[in-house]
Length: 346
Image (cartoon, rainbow, N blue to C red; front, top):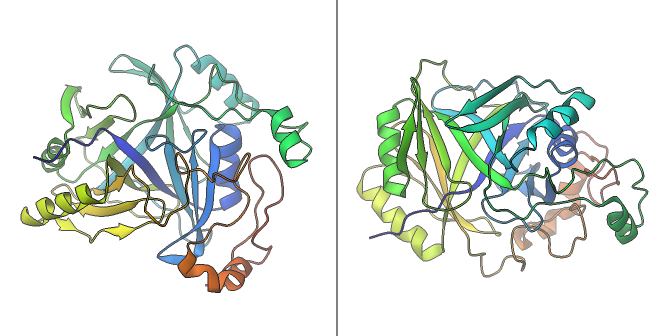
């Protein structure tokens, strides 16, 4: 028997402007910009990784910036929202922080006993903060220590205090075309039914973090992929050998499953089962030739990642890639060490 997946590894969204995404997730929400790399399927687009202090699987949210794409529309089969865990009693701080930055709190709720608030990122993606006592290693951006480390002027920074800092992912809300079919996939992955309301069914993985997937059973428009939508959610598996076993199981069941892919920081595969949701399985163990480190963060960076990271197979094209990617400020306001002000030609 395959072991249960203990919860989410990461969630990936599509945004418009890379700088706006870095400002929202890195500055406003206080996540660490772990990696500035490229979409391996399209090296002329960024792939930005955000997460906790070390980039622990289960804390990571990534984005594909596409400034030229038409706005997306959440719908079926897709994901409606990503949720982050914050400490109990911290939502008052977050309401004030959002108000000070001109970000509208779109809703607040008590869902299955957990208090939450919801906002939209600059592309329109629904982002929820949920009070939870889930463990985590928050990224606390100290003005003094960061300024001393990189020589930058950090006097204008407004870091999130540790008492309110995001602890990692809490979960996702999905809009499957077939909730019962998607529930069978979650059951196979080790998620268990926990509770339900009129149109929301909660499943929880056996791990202690990033463990929640809510399925919505409601009529919705069809998903139109683009900025403002979530591309996929990934669950954690231990290593590549486990991925190969999952690949065989999904293929035997007739699911649409990809080959195992080398994402350089981890190995993964993608599967669409009944319900149509795109789910990735990603390894907690790094790839043998990937960069060393305790998580997905750049082990050589003292703060937010500034350099463009490229796998060795793209290094020969670095000058071309950097020349096509637009420059943007890191969340601490410092200038990047890669990229240019040129707008990519598409």
